[in-house]
Length: 276
Image (cartoon, rainbow, N blue to C red; front, side):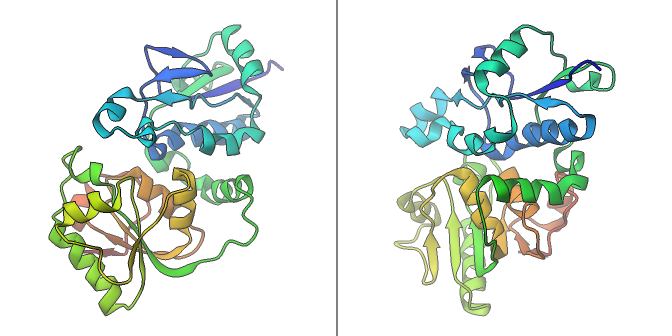
C-alpha cells in the first residue's frame, strides 16, 4: 500500500518556505482547525503526519502594536504537538519530493495539505474527546481540575479592529454580575495590557475580584480557560470557542452577544448556556 502523507500547512502564503518560514497568518484559534483536521484524518485514513507549518510572522501587527507578541509566532505552542509528527527536516524532504493536493482530493489521492477553517468545529466534533486527551497529554497535565472561577476572554481586537463591537457597559455589567451577584472571582484573558483594558472600559482600575492573567502562551491560556467552571466571551472569537471545546465537563458559558446574533455565526455545535 502506498504511504499517505498529510501536512498541516495551516495558512497558505505567497511568501513561504515550508516548514521554516511564512509571512502572514492567523491567530492560534484559527490555526488549530486545519491542524486538528489533519490529525483526525491521519488517524482515520492511516496517514503519516508531517510537521505543521507554524513559523509565521506578521509585520503589520508589529508595526501597529510595537510588540513581539503581535507577530503571532506560535512555535512554543505547536512544538508541544511535534511528538506526533515527522521532524521538520524529514518533512521538508517529503513535501518537496512529492505533489500535495488540497483536502477535496483526500478520498482519491495520498498526499494532502490542510489549511483554512472549512466547517470549523463541525469537521471533527466526533473527535472532541480524543482531541481533549491529546492536548492534555501533549502539555503534560497530570491532574486536570476545574476551578470555581470565571474565565473572561477580552480580546480588544475583536471589538475595535475587527468591528465586532460590544459596548463597554455590557462588559462592566458582566463583571459586576459575576463578582457581586454570583460572588465569583473573574480572570481576564487578553492579548492587551492592563492599561489598554482600563482605558477601553474607561475606568481607573479593574473592579474588585477581577484580575488580568499574565499570559504564558496562547495555548496555555486556552487550557487554563477550559479549566474554569464558568466562561464568558465573544462567540465571534474562535479562541474562546476552543476553550469551550476542550473542556471535558459541563462548563457554564455566558455569551457577550445576543442569542440571535450568535446563531447567525454557526461556528460550533456547542450551544451557549446564557446570553448577557
